[in-house]
Image 1 (cartoon, rainbow, N blue to C red):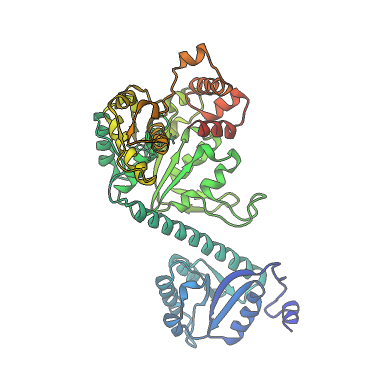
Image 2: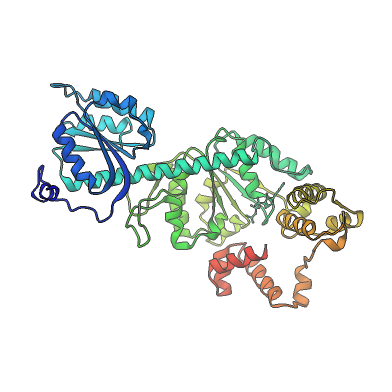
Amino acid sequence: MVFQYWNEGWWGFNTKPHNSMVNGKILLVDDNKSILSALEILLQFEYKEVVSISNPNQIPSFPQLDSFDLVLLDMNFSAGVNTGNEGLFWLREIRKRAPHTSVIMMTAYGAIDLAVKALKEGAADFILKPWNNERLMATVRSAFELRRSKQEIHDLKKKESNLKQVINEDKSLIVGNSKPLTSVLELVNKVAKTDVNVLITGENGTGKELIARELHRLSSRKNEVFIGVDMGSIAENLFESELFGHTKGSFTDAKEDRAGKFEAAHQGTLFLDEIGNLSLQMQAKLLSAIQNRSVVRVGSNKPIKVDIRLICATNCNLEQMVADGLFREDLLYRINTIHIEVPPLREREEDILVLAEFFLKKFAQKYDKQGLRINNLAQERLMEYPWPGNIRELQHTMERAVILSDGNVLKPADFLLHAKTMQSFESDPTTLDEMEQIMISKALDQHGGNYSAAAEQLGISRQTLYNKLKKKK
Ligand SMILES: Nc1ncnc2c1ncn2[C@@H]1O[C@H](COP(=O)(O)OP(=O)(O)OP(=O)(O)O)[C@@H](O)[C@H]1O
């Protein structure tokens, strides 16, 4: 019976059922019972739960309105009235009570102005009556996807805020009181409240990401998300979709519409780490997103407005990269309205022991080894050491020492301090690993820290180089 309905058409039904049932919930609101039944039949082929009501006054008391992915809402309910005001009223009510639910308005031909009004009020789309089935299903599908990505972003934000509570972000996580660090923190305090783009530079492990998080924590966006993207770890062909999102079918693995990191960071802070690794083509796209304050998903041509605070970080010398034609000058000027240089640990010696004590306490607690202390000789060694891997290396060194310690006193032998200067490496590399490190360091030095160029010179992929560097850390 239902198939007959489908194939022979009422309102011109000729849509083939979608091949898989979607786990979605749709609410239909229309005072015309025939329309409700026709829609129910059509949508039940594809969506697991389709509920209909003929009186919109039921909406406020409707149980779990926000559990619906979509509402299809008529514009007019009272006989003889076709102003659309009722529909707009109920649209606002639904948006208030279930802000993540997508609403599609159903309106008569000739009432385009009403549909436009509804879009301005936040409707996801509109359908003209009588409808064409294929077009209706396409409209429903894309509104459904929109709801799903909104939900994803909402879930992300929730996770972030839970995380925040866990790590108690009410206080700064930055340890140290050396002059160079204090100057950095003064600058952070000054610019945090503004929305200007910030570029953070410094060697690996100096705390660039921590500074970015501090900027977010002290900003008016602190209750919104902080989304970090490690550009070094994303495969070149996925950059665009990761940052800007994609539409279903835009490439082989694009099984569904997906929001990118820019959209996910809407109203919050977007942190792009290792920015020196962007190809020139991606730099152009990033520049256009920053200038237009909007992104276009791969496979779409519709710009989506985004409101983000952008923070970028790199250990590359971007000015040198500009001179070498590897980085766009106009992009550099866009991202570095304020430039924060995080000094290496060897240039803030006063912080070494403070940080060592901080990590000692943290790991002693974690591994249940309270009462540990560092003896004087070991303290001297820690102070003398150049810390090429900066605070990350100090953190790992302390963790290892705590795990392996036998007594309560940590002595020099408990710390694995094995930095070699380039000269000593060059005179006698004793292992293949050391040889590899020398070649990687040299290639990175020659290319101002640019991974892509260094990887090309070494004859390995950027991803392989990145993995080797992470392993080294
Ligand atoms: N001042 C600090 N106080 C406490 N912990 C710190 C400090 N600076 C850095 N850390 C810790 O050191 C580690 C490395 O810091 P972070 O990841 O911010 O460095 P980074 O410069 O962004 O590194 P990379 O360049 O490799 O991405 C992190 O675990 C961070 O929490």
